[in-house]
Image 1 (cartoon, rainbow, N blue to C red):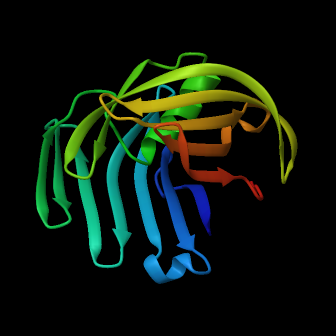
Image 2 (cartoon, rainbow, N blue to C red; image 1 turned 120 degrees about the horizontal axis):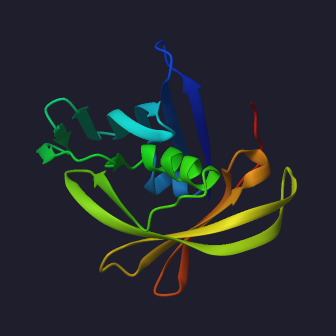
Image 3 (cartoon, rainbow, N blue to C red; image 1 turned 60 degrees about the horizontal axis):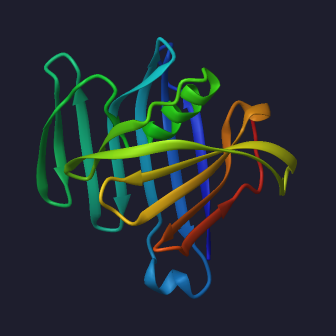
Length: 193
């Protein structure tokens, strides 16, 4: 159906990073999704936690831009033409920085049960739980993984992710389902460091 490319790279300032995810539809799906989805989070790592500074998501003419003003405790910007103005509390993530935060929390053996995430123009609570472990075959070899599930309160959509401890808890597989039916599956194809 498509490919995605995820990249985490250092930013100009030490301890700051840029995390980008590009999703490209393939084949017949390109007719429905002709524009790539590009999401970028600018974040810092402080005391082994991710702290978002800015988020930008764009697909065709739709865009979401959020700035995190930690000094004044506000997240402001614009989501698909609507203003964003939300209060900030420590630990709040954007839809990209949460991925880095979960990897750090797994590495440190301290995955919280609830995360608050700014998604478009709303602050949403998601429950996270560690389901166990599994050995899976991937394009880069057989890997021992830790399985984590995520679900928004009151929503029947579940995201299940497999993280590989031997790779620094990089996610190597993910599946999203609704009412028990698989909607989306991603599998790692390659990893460059």
